[in-house]
Structures are given as structure tokens and as C-alpha cells.
Image 1 (cartoon, helix red, strand yellow):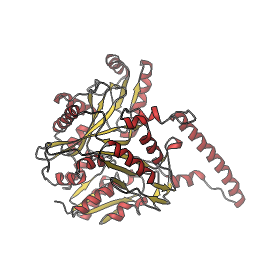
Image 2 (cartoon, one colour; image 1 turned 135 degrees about the vertical axis):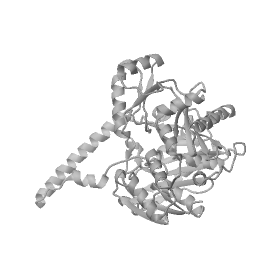
Image 3 (cartoon, one colour; image 1 turned 30 degrees about the vertical axis):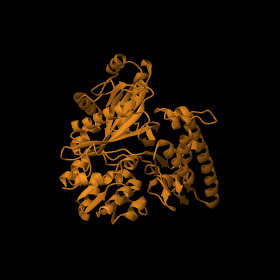
Image 4 (cartoon, helix red, strand yellow; image 1 turned 60 degrees about the horizontal axis):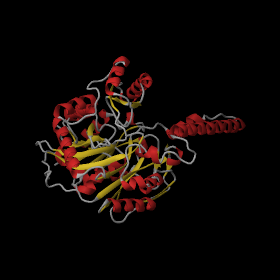
Length: 503
């Protein structure tokens, strides 16, 4: 077993990994940017090293600096968490070259499953169902038009690399195709440095179901049941639960077996997630494989009583899985709400500032994975996730009731959060019945009293911000003129807000 592990991440996931290390008797090494000097993960770690300025590209994405710290600290392994470098095959290979264990899959598996077209081809070979579409990338509009007509509209254009909804476009009619291709390529190139795209049939009103898998280096692969991830906003998961109301035991076994086959085809080791779309006829299709620990992993931990971070560390150290598929049992129901520093009444606009008061919920069945505390600042440099509120109940009725209580107890002042929004979801009749799909939020909750949709709200918010800026600029000019100096409100605002980079 390792004696020291470096955590190449920040925030709540870094805190989560540090806690697992401490329970295993392993020293934890943190890295931090200048803006994170007082962050919770820095305080909890046994050692902490500065790696650069606030922008992630100058700190948390600097492979060379992270490896330098690992060598200086004599860390035997690196846990990447999720986001940043977690699915970067170059980073995994660099760790291997430096004789440092990467706590995750091999760089070969990362590269193969990170390219969605290669992953599709692999799944087809082993018989895992995939959504009808192209096996290779599409490089010209004429070919795209032929494919779309063959598949039938609506279609989905997707980036070959990356995720999080970037480089994705839904096309309902042929006259939308050219502009959608251009937009998807441009967004994919900006987000991932690779503008390749592919096309598949658009599955209407699907459920998003994912299966957690564990695989050791001795050929053992098991799945830990499913997570329901259909409550999404703009392709970003917001609320997750396990088990799913959409699956019966027969379908669960079929999807679980497909997830195991997918991992075996990729010669996968460590923790990973195989994601599927489930249509209205209960047909499932491979979507992608996330080659890392997921944000929503706590719901699986609560229903299986397994610590996934500890399992990752043990697998990376060469140990075999401690449970077989037959020994695994799913107990009760778990739900996770992601608490973001966003204003749900203003089109989920980022909310920055200092957390003045923080009261976390507690009591039976409540877990809060967070990385914030009273007095700490929330900036736009990183993802706005404050914490993950997770509950467990003996059944789904109890877990919903418990989540509603926990959300009402949760108090954060100084910034806006998505707590009220999560409570609305818990109180929604369709959610309670379990009869929802990936369009739940836009159908049920996004149209407020004004009747404006998300794009109109965003335009209104930008217009209001521009008007406020002009007023501030005018006021500051008058003040500066009176004092014999001129200040730059753009410079001041830029220093305060910085750049936003998600995980």
C-alpha cells in the first residue's frame, strides 16, 4: 500500500480523497493555486504546495508542476479526482514515465474511451447496443447530409472528444444542418482543441442511466448498480439517485452486463462509469464511458456501503476486488443534490462573494461533501460547485422526505445558491412519481412567472449587466474627475471576477 498520495485537484473532491487517505493511514499531499491558499483541502492535507496563479491553465492543468511537486514530496501515487487532468491520457502517461502510480485507468484506456468514435466502434464489436449513427467522424456537410437523411431526423451532432454538453447540437430539419455543424465544430475546437464531430440519431425523451464499475488488474470486473442522472440542465447533471425508477430487475441485469462488457472490451482497470440512454420503449444504448470517479459517486456508496475512493486506491496498489458480483447488494435509496453558487432566479447566473454564514444539515441519513466554510470566497475561476448534499432512506419515499428536510435546514448567506431550486424538484409531482426524462427541467421548472425561456432570460441579464456597467462607469468618471484621476471599472471588475473555468 502507498504511504503518500498527491491529490491533483481542489475543492470538495480533494477534501473527499484526503479523508479516505487519512482513514487508510496514508499521508495526503495537496496542491493549490494562489487563490486557494486558504482552501479547505489545503488545511486538511498533511503537506501542501503552491503550483501557480489562479487560472487553471497556469496551475491545476500544469502537468510539469504537479509532477515536480510529487517528486519533491516523495509521493508514490497521484489521484486526479475528476475534472482538470482526470481523463487526460498525456498526464497518465507522464505519471507512468515518472514512476508514479496514476490512480485511474491506463493511458491507453483513457485515450480509447475518451474518443467517442473509437468507443462506439469498440462497443459495436462486443455487441453493446449503440445509438444508430456514424462509426467515424464526419468532415464535410455533404457527407453529413447523406448520413442525416439515412438515419432520419432529428439527429444529434456531437464532439468526438470532451463532454459536458460542449460541441453538441440537435438538428430537427435539413435546413438547420450546415449552421449546426459549424457551431458544433467551433465550440468543440474551443473547448477541447479538437473540432472533430460525429452524428447519431437523437433519442427523444430518454432517461440517462449510468452504471458504476470497478475493475482490478487481475481480470475481475463488477458493476455496482445504476444511477439515475436524468435531472439535467443543458446536458449538465443536477440531481442523481440510485436505484432508478425506470429499471426492473431484468433490465438492470442486462444493462449491468453490458457495462461490464464495455469495461472488459477497453481492458479497463480502476473505477469508471458506463453511461446509457434509455428510450420510452425500454431499449438502452451506450452513450459514453467516464474514465474517472464521478461527481455523483456518493449515491452508489450509500446504497452499496462501499468506499469508492478507497477501492480506487487499493486497485491502484495492485490488490484484487474484495467482492464478487454475487456478493454485492443494493440497499435502500440514495439521492444527491448538487449545491451550486448560482442564482436560479437569474437564469443560474454565477454568484460570487464571501460565504458569511454556513449551517449544514445533519441527522439520520444525511451526508454533505463540501469544500467551503464560513468566511471563504467563491470566485469565477473554477466550477461553482459548493457541495454535494446526499441522503439515504430505506426507500425512495423516505429519501425524498429526508432530502426536503435537509435542503430546508441548509443555510448559506452571502451568495445565491441552487438550494431553493433543488427543493422545487423534490416537491414536483412528476419527480415524486419517477416519471421524468432528461427534459424534465425545461418542461417543468425553467419557465418562470415572466414566461421567458432560458435564452431570453440570459439576454435580459446581459442587458441589465451592461446598463449597470454604464451607470457605474459614468459615476466613476464623475468621481475621478472630481478627484483629478480616472479609474478603470473594467480593470477593477476583471481583478475581482477573473476567469471562469468549469470541472
